[in-house]
Length: 282
Ligand code: 3HC
Figure 1 (spheres, rainbow, N blue to C red):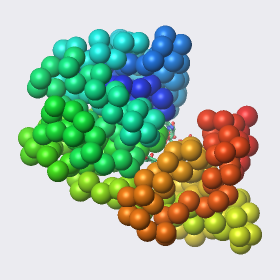
Figure 2 (figure 1 turned 120 degrees about the vertical axis):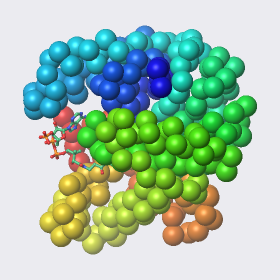
Figure 3 (figure 1 turned 30 degrees about the vertical axis):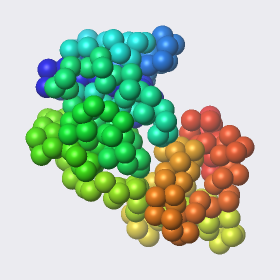
């Protein structure tokens, strides 16, 4: 892998660009406009500085990492000459389909397409491109520079060679690849989101308030964050999107989103990113 493109510079996209560039791999980071591209680069600079502060890397490595990142505001241009494209745009099928249709012609024929989708069918996304055999799910976890897992999702037509290359790439990023089959929410969110949803039902039904629900899971189950703090961290809109994918995908009422979650998202209370969710953030 000589060069990688990352489409989308949000929390996941800039984290993905960060870890590739830190391994000395040139990264083309594409965003919709200059302002968002600069914001993504600033977030990477901040997180690298945090790692320098913790003496995990030195200032020279931070500088080299930033030199390996080039930002683009033209998605088609950003995939020229790359070997791998990692798509990390919001959790919406039509939006992801549009991005892949923009890059399918522009990217080299041999390039592998990976989606960082949290839950959407890889087989369905792959079928919108001319290269379903070179299409795969590469699901990273927030914060990307810290979390060790890459959930590798094999679509119905994904080739063994594509899986092998992407698993080797995950190890090169000092991550652990775990291969799973292509069903809604894969393993990670099929297990995580019902837990978060049930925690929200506990608040909705007055079993306990958010602080206490989180305290139970942190002190009782040694979770690093309680489920409601984690929901805020992930984004309540993202949690709702994933629950919808599970509910529609399995047609099982057990995945129906808690009405309180729906109401909070309707109110724009999305968690960290909006300054308020189950907790308030300055
Ligand atoms: N970049 C670089 N380093 C970071 C970082 C970032 N963005 N965020 C945290 N860190 C580092 C800190 O520097 C610190 O380093 P240290 O261990 O050397 O001290 C370490 O991570 C811990 O961070 P903090 O001390 O600031 O705070 P915490 O101890 O509370 O850890 C946390 C923060 C790592 C987020 C921890 O709370 C955690 O692991 N939470 C659970 C996260 C989780 O479950 N993520 C998955 C969500 S699901 C998902 O992403 C899938 C999607 O599809 C929904």
